[in-house]
Picture 1 (cartoon, rainbow, N blue to C red):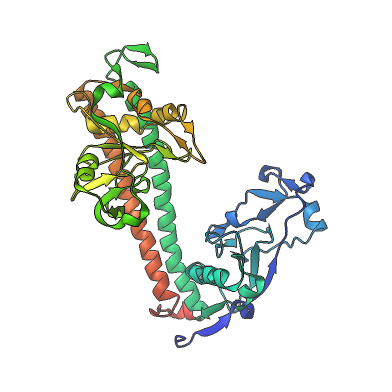
Picture 2: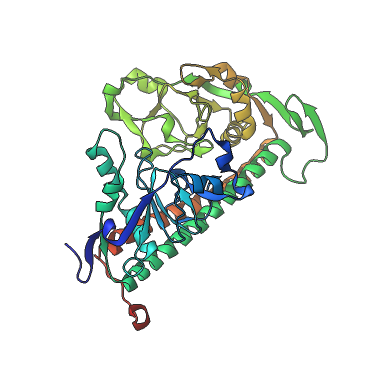
Length: 426
């Protein structure tokens, strides 16, 4: 049902539609890097769902004049028509004049009827409909310019549009600000981690020695991980997909990111017998190493916290447990999830069919840098503080994203109406 005072129209009713093209790639003289000038050329991956103020590629002025490239105005709304289900419906607003390729439909809106930011938020909110059209209308997953022309949009007054867009924009600003903080914290943590795990607490060590892995504090030892283990390395449990769905929880490779705790809320369930339960049951402080995956994800490492119920681990994962009298579990985990460890495992990865793998011997031979327990505790505390700050900011980001989604659902449908003062109404 259309909210009172709103209009139910189509994008074709309120915008002129056009699309671009790709100049011949055999003519390198038609393209130029952004730093050399030229004209911005927008592709689907340039669409950010908000503002577009830069592109990966530029085309030359000759390309614009010699092909079907149309120079789009500032404020034009762009929407992706194809490129796979993850790309269809991506959108953005030009903050500069630009051209586009053929996968993008440009909407030159009637400014007396539609505010560009409101239209863009409508497109973002409507993305599931784009994908539905792409899936049902034809063999290839894409939408056409005619699909865009017929796409429905609910339009309140310009005053309401601007107020709705302003509310959602303020949430987007908060999201972008929080993401920038997270990005910077990740850089700082990575640098801090590399320094603490190779040189120790700042100012504590005056003398250093050369070892097989470089210069380390003179008091530290370099010990193969295998000499520090009380359990493992053990490969996990293989079960056919048909027995998934009920039973005990199982950790799979998607249950943790490198250097993070296992996320219990993501775990699936599998039916196993008692002997399998006893052999593959995880315990707090176990460390998990991804042994088979793509090159970008091989040897990622997860940490097992206190578990609320019986949990086992799958065959693509190895499990180890360290002797806490020699190395704190969290310190061993930090060493295994460090950039140095990643370089070590990448250098030993074996090629399999479309994947790579590391084995138990690779894990056992990993050289652990070992300070005394007291310094290990200080290093773990510093890393935990950095991780906690990251978790806090990530929780704030998740909350802002959920708030935006909720606001879009009620504001863009008229379920909740915004109030306008006299100036805004005018």
